[in-house]
Image (tube, rainbow, N blue to C red; front, top):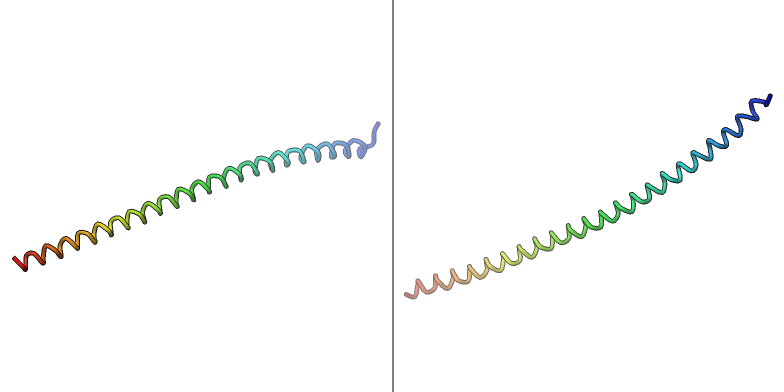
Amino acid sequence: MAEPQDMIVPLLREIRAEMSAGFERVDRKLEEHDARFDKLERRFDNLREAVNGESVLGRYAAAEVEERLEAIERRLAALEKAG
């Protein structure tokens, strides 16, 4: 009959090898997920920049309209005083 240590040590080596392979698979999956999240974060950053750019452009356009309206109101007030 084999000694217990002769049976246990090979089993422990086999378990260690299987666990190592499992951890390698988990590590690969985590790297894949990290890459996907990085890609999504970049896309969200691009969207955020686009939205901020549009809102700045919208504010600029609204300010320009406001300035034009004020100019028209000043001209109308001047005409009313003259007339």
